[in-house]
Length: 77
Image (cartoon, rainbow, N blue to C red):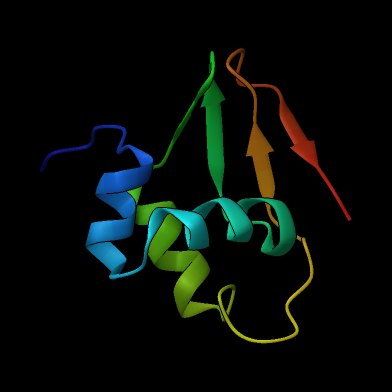
């Protein structure tokens, strides 16, 4: 099984939304993402779980983790 980091465009294509929605979901809905340098990267299985748990749904606050390039977990909200 392939377990690689996906880009903003790749994860947007996978779930069928535009890149602007991805950036909004990271900042407003806590979409699981890791910032590596200037780039956001995603693990498909983490995004799948987030979507299944209603993360992209209306009224969802920022409850998921975002990781910086050094993999320290940061929780917002």
